[in-house]
Amino acid sequence: MGVVFSRLLQTVKLKRDAFVWMDFNDRATGDAAILVVLTQILMTLGFGTSFVRLLNPFMLIQVLLGALFFWVVYSGGVYLVGRYLFDASGQYAIYLRITGFAYPTLLLSVFVVLFVPNALLALILGGAWFVVIVANGLTYTVDLSIKMAAVAAVGGYVLIVIVQVIFGSIWRF
Image (tube, rainbow, N blue to C red; front, side, top):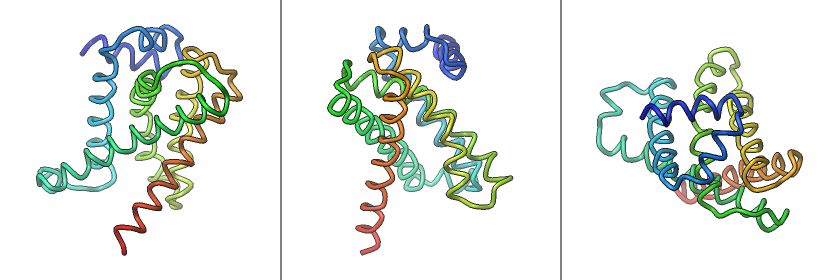
């Protein structure tokens, strides 16, 4: 796990080496999944869910599936925008890896919500660094300009919001 956390720190610092490592290391997809799961558990606890409640198997499964759903759909949205709108190179796996290693930055939203009472604004501010990391990762791995990579990263975010609204509407029905 030492290599993973070292690469995570490089990712947060926007170091090119981390993204190149992700591009050539197939194992990085599993490492990214672990980071997504651990981050989601920490975020759930940070937003006020008790540890005892989180140990409830149904709650834990719901939290973990929600995180993995976000990860896969967001990565797919970025992939679709990058690949088909901007004709970027790269396979879906690299998009998963970049998104997974950027995911821990969403922990910022736990701290932002303490200072910003508006939940939507807290989500945007907390997710800004996440989008910046994804955009920078795309510039290094799939040969997109920073502007196109930023549009792809934001496009993935818009897609995940739309999908979550649709599924939220279905569950309420």
